[in-house]
Image (tube, rainbow, N blue to C red; front, top):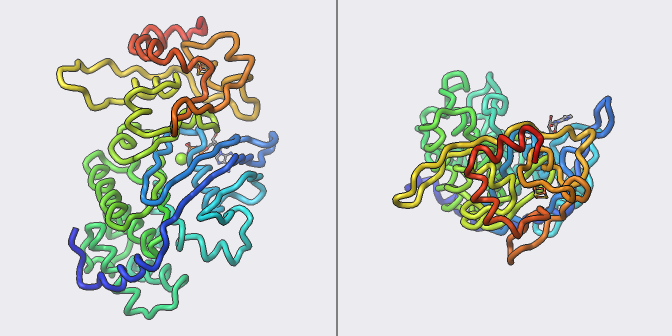
Length: 360
Ligand SMILES: Nc1ncnc2c1ncn2[C@@H]1O[C@H](COP(=O)(O)OP(=O)(O)O)[C@@H](O)[C@H]1O
Ligand code: SF4
Ligand SMILES: [Mg+2]
């Protein structure tokens, strides 16, 4: 990707910033509700290596956005957050407000799914980007504007449009502007929370390839949050699959998505269209019947047992820990050893229909 002549300032900043390594340890998050604590995230741990992309995947409501908001400390007051969020060894959860201000946007930046909410309707977009730069760095307006122009070029927007207001932009352009803004401080870790969900498929592809190009070009680390397993396959190195506030399977994308071992991942795999091997017939898409359990009163044992076609008595009695089954590959299922058989049976829609009728 070619950058314009303002590259120098941007690259100087790039080189000045060390790579970011994230290590999340036993993160537990409970929202305060009138009906008691709602444990949206229940003891998850994962790492994001410098320059790598972690996909955080799972159906709507499983706790993905709660996790990314906690990394930026953007959860509502009163939310109980325990565990550690180590950013290059520094615990974000224990930072003073001053240290947090220096970290947010500067070291970790967030792109959310609702671009419109992230932009002020009465300030032109260029000025918004400049404000965000100048809030963190002691640079002149001219330098900040030059960087905003670089960023617009990077996300594929004409620099002349920096002087326009959000309502003059299409949805896809607004989303690119938000990405430009999120990148304006060159944070080492980019959190992209369903960055393309609101867009049509062509625009989704365009924006994702922009984000990826930027991530490759700037060697940033990224967490891509999505319910779409296809996006993970195309964009991530590692994947963590969440179900009802827990990570149920984690590992290199090429392993987890090709040969999933947790029945929930197997189910997700069947529910999305995927790349086929040469000569392979397209299998039917099968959705996982039922919904997420109520976390005010989570099911006993394995949280997936109410929907799992392979559940046994042990599954409802005993919670399966997330165990390393191979180096860098973990699965939380009592019966992960039977994954080959599960994958074969899972391609039969009747397997899931039986689970839905509660006769597993
Ligand atoms: N402020 C809040 N108060 C209470 N519950 C919340 C709040 N925000 C989210 N939740 C609940 O936490 C769960 C996880 O939500 P979220 O992290 O947004 O899931 P995802 O991003 O995977 O769709 C959901 O059941 C949601 O209803
Ligand atoms: S532990 Fe049991 S219920 Fe849970 S995913 Fe494995 S087989 Fe299914
Ligand atoms: Mg979400």
